[in-house]
Image (cartoon, rainbow, N blue to C red; front, top):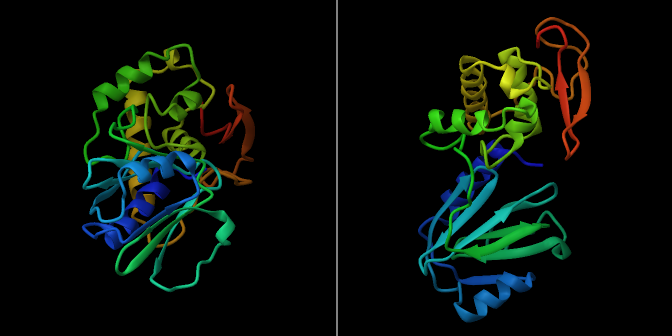
Length: 246
């Protein structure tokens, strides 16, 4: 599942291509979007802004609507020059937004809606500003839960997924199965500070980012064998070093 850094990069690419441009053609195979487009055509509207909030990609139109998409596991947005051949089958197309110069295609997008409301999420680790006090308060409300699960809760903290959950906890030296109640404020703040730094670095990276524990065999810090276990009700995978993380 794409994490906040991936969605941030996608939004930035789409913004550069589409921001401020007029929609020449809007096509969708999703009935919910099609019904709204029939009532208030997207073609002819200006794309005000494309931006990311957590794992959600938002496209704001001049008519007041926002197209919210969530990629889940298989969804993706591609950008093409007009007339350029698509890299994915047309059967995978869910949304097309065409301007004079570019065509944005949403492939296999499982969650898409027009809305006038912002997603109800916790502080965004990739936001221009980050309310650490509010983030700490929301984490503290989950005192009985394991910190690895809490970091994945988008109503607590927006933008983090399996990769940066594992990586930030490793960098902070914290066992992902420790309960929030057993962690001091300074430790929680350290985890969130590291996660924000890692996500921002990944979002701006120009080459592949190397991971210390995620999907690895040996810890890059101490050489200990990395352990892996499913965690939480959603059985999300967690990687950690039993020596470095206590």
